[in-house]
Figure (cartoon, rainbow over the protein chains, first blue to last red):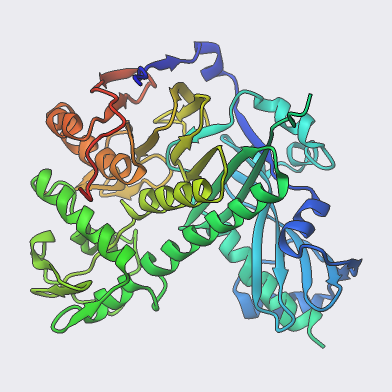
Length: 174
Length: 303
């Protein structure tokens, strides 16, 4: 079977318009199921004190941007945490499952958004995504599903997980 | 009507230093979830074996110990090293996994305690029987230019073994699709990487793209990126991107680096691997497009 390798150039207008790429993989409930299948979850959000916040920053060498952390206690042991990281070009919501001993069980990306040109640092720009369903988020670039080309590194996620492990030690483990 | 409608499941995890996305479609949601979990497990295994950063990986053990003694590696690591050596030979050293020493010297990789010989090349690596590897002089290797492609191929294999009929694995832009339908793959703009220059249609095929856009940094008044020519040790400077399509992702992954340096001179190698190439200039327009036959029984580095 032959298939022709053809490059389809995008119209110039697509290049001029500011671009944003966004995908929703999982909502909270789906992420819970993906990491801890068949388990029950009890919401246990944590509000950090300034002392805890400083301790986490010191232990992880990563800045804490939010005092509130979305945490769920998992039936039968373990924790489910939803967190977000902001990079120069990316804004990512992800979920981390921790085993009973505080080790990482699994990491799942929930929402991935990238853009170029500074919008990501703008709270308002980010706010437009909050609470969006998969359909409305994908409207941004509905035909763009697969991208070839070096993606951003996942360094911000690595730092985020480091911060969450310190958060576990300081605010969850009793 | 007894046929059930097909659903598609999409997952993404941070692995191999990037974002690995796996999509699978079929009629049985539980089966798809199982297939995706198993596929991620195989990518994770490649990550653990071939990470430059993890001190317990095969790659770290090689860099610490393969000179002056030898090191036994996992058969997967062996296969990737074997393929890397083959591409090195066929490109006359343009593709060279020992150029990690230059990447480390420029800060693209951590330096660690390694003291590589400053003239070390791929010719200093020896693959012996039973997955034993030996370095003739101090060498550091980095499989960053080929392991992602290998991981994608393993994940595709696992999806198929789990009865998934169509899917896609994308490891930070190195991707492979399978199934009846063709898929539209957008290619990033070489100078503005969160925009797209265009798209390519792929069916049962892999594609990888290399460019220096996200990782370039300033060095002596010029921006350079982590792509370099193993023969000269020169870093890539131009804001171009190279995409290569081939049957296997490991081939596409390695060939992009070779085409990045050799451009049109890589045509012979592309023909040998039944690969296609697309070179995008800084303004996003294609300056070179090479099509070879799309015979799916293309030669692989493991033949």
